[in-house]
Image (cartoon, rainbow, N blue to C red):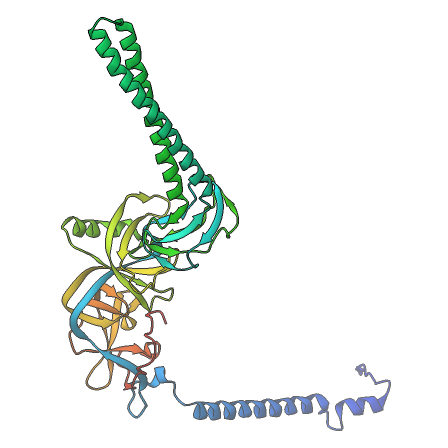
Length: 417
């Protein structure tokens, strides 16, 4: 008995030969072979590109600093020194005139002349303007005429009083007539005094017609032109004079800074105050602390202080904004380092110190008072140490450095730069 295995035939023998080939190896195996070759070629190209890039890019400064044969990191250094370090308290201030006067007319009349120029500096007593004085001259003459009339009446009443007294002593008239005449004399004396008061008032009005400067200072812009009627109750006035020599600066300081300032004022010391421009680089004037306000502003936690400046060169103007530096103390023999060298990290403040082998080390420091671009170092540095002020972002402990010369005309760098 023979078993017959089932045999299947392709419907299309040509398709079967095309799919599998003559020996059973079809296009699938060829396709896999080509994909492997292409993958190897791509991997080789990527490896060659990476090697070429690594050779051309070269080592980074931070990664290779300190290795033999590699260039050092270019930095700028400054030598630590010892000397006197002034301790300043800084604040924002506004220039304020010691006295500001709005000159107004004290009489009613027409403004007939102006004897000043806008912006002129005047002294107390200088003539400023003149008001028509003719109405007051007429009042003066009228009062003087009344005085002459009343003086004549007073003289006649006094003569009659003497006669009445003589007649009363001879018992020719009664006592009542004498008393009545004496009262009339007193009445005329009062009238004469009233006339004299009117004369003095008219003379005073004439003086008020000539307006003079009440204080020395600088005149602002003219507020009334010649020919206008002016009145004693005018709100704007004729002009404004501000006293600018001396002049004051009102500035603020934090409340925590007040105790040492108050202590030095009570001891009789004169604390120096310097006014700088808006940028804080150009010193405008130097003066002295005058007073401290009697209360602290609760909204800002600051107190107002007032300083006096001679202002001989008129460098300060009222309402000018200035930066103020109050010299509180001068530390002698202090170790002074640039503020730009101070770095801050998780362990506190530190600096990079350049050693004799042109490598850097991290030196923890304790800072004290700061003044401008310098700071006092309490511990960690000594005079002569070279500290890095520029290029610290590329440094690591032990990095090799190349010291470059700093530009003398460049502005000081801030520690956060």
